[in-house]
Image 1 (cartoon, rainbow, N blue to C red):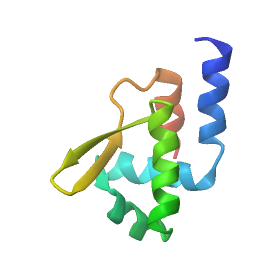
Image 2: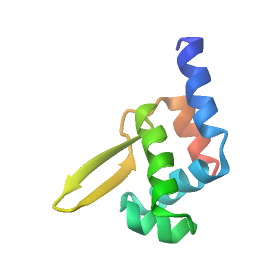
Image 3: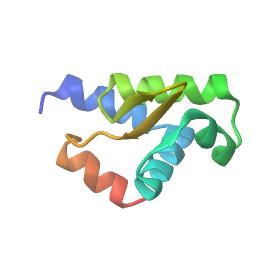
Length: 88
């Protein structure tokens, strides 16, 4: 893996809220923004910003279902990142 990509992923993972979101998604398999926001006690706006960062780095993917957007951990997360998530 290129150093720049690894650095970008690690910077995104170096945040307690984003790690909490990833841990929640790991346990639940998927959740919508409202459920995530309620579970981690963070505003919808802040939760959405964290989810967008996770999506931009390829760590989560989203699916629109009617009015709700559901997030889940991306199936193609690199092995080293999957290993780190398993440690949560």
